[in-house]
Length: 443
Picture 1 (tube, rainbow, N blue to C red):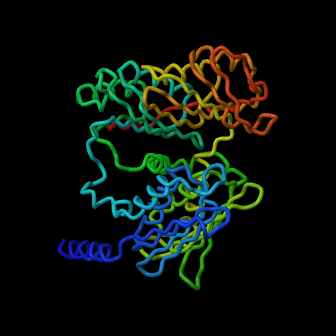
Picture 2: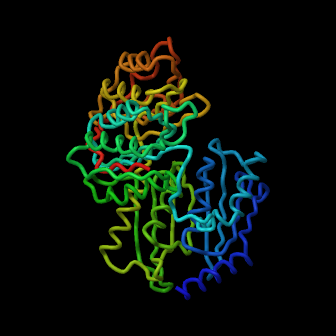
Picture 3: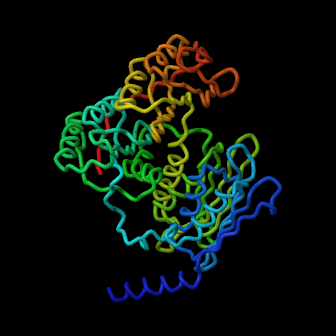
């Protein structure tokens, strides 16, 4: 214990003498903003920086990172989603202050142990096997228990599903977290009944500090979605080789480029207890992405067995594919109300559509929900079906943000209440039914 305390105090001294340094330069590159971060090296440093950039929805066009002993240097060329430099002063200031703050890299300085009570919301975690319509049933249970969904994110991959749902107490005018332990137990019991015969329910009245998207990766990793049936995306190539001269394992990932790709791969490498010592990433022609990492396990050793090598390949393939959704990206924007998410998911289910991924948010009385809908049959969805969905949802604006199967290559279109159907005649369905959520964890 004394040795541990001494080590912690020494680490704090080193950090205090070498605070993170951040430079944001809009002159160094003709087509991107350059962000350079120098900091003391520790496990998770790279992920902390990438997470801040990803949360601002900035696109990393090119990056390289390298550690020299206890010092780490990251350089990122970033743009906004439209390919422009980051010129917004508040955004630049936020990046500077956040990346220079010690608790960005060392959460323990906040005097927490990873779980703290929350006064704002109650968090619900679900993982398990898909089953048709189960999300709709879960939403119905929450609505019946007067739980208002404040935000949620759901991923499906290889017949597995994971979701993090934040709810507030609709029974109180001020909202907030559900404080009544008996009521939390009742929610757990009802969800347990819904999942009868599955892995059970665990509950606690606290909220995890873990980043929501990182938590989804962790949940699917723990649920071994990487080992589930299903071939990897042929567009994703992962190689893991040994670099004997330097004592590193070299990981190369080639796949189609997309937002937050670097976050997803670095998150998985970090949670598998590997350290990135050097690396480079870049966008490639025709929408591709190239990532190269030189890694070692936290114990200092490279990947040493064929089984471990294969596991790294499978886990990185899963990390790339979890957030990928090839179906229709449909945004529902409307006034928020009690039971809205339950109604919308029920309407999708009743019209033969399934949700492959979802991002739910509610703020200032407005709900903005994005669903990735598809069906494995490959049959086109008739315009009257989508018009029926619009009519059933009610006073809402439906927006097709991405439709890769449409003749126009995926343009954005909108239909508001009372208008006619649009573009949906070319939409193909890809049916991935929910099986069963094997685990529900209430915070």
